[in-house]
Length: 178
Image: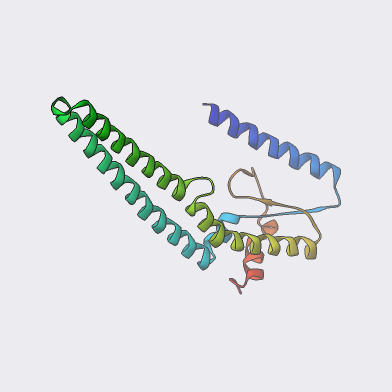
């Protein structure tokens, strides 16, 4: 419910902002692009996404396998607990806790905010995004557009004239359309 309200508020804010901008800058030209469409039309982006998905799946499988091993150790410990001395119990518990720490660190290394997946995504995707931004900036400058909106994601338009869609022009600037 909260997500729906937040989504409606975002859309309303975008529309109000667009109307305010258009009221203040009547002489300015407006256009929009669909970055989802642009990205899907760039083979290197699709390839990068596939590569990231494979890496992510492999790393996730590795982490899950280690968690399964920890669960196995824990279940064995629970089954044998009554037969173990206090020192042995403590040693087994520490072993399980240590393995759990190792797996959590591995998970953080792979999937954390500054982890391997984040860095690889930045390495593969950021240059493509920069190229798109530079192409949009060039189109805006050459075409004297005051604002270029992104029609993908949050900027849902109630109506948009296709003549203002500059997505194919961005792809052309990037060398992916004739």
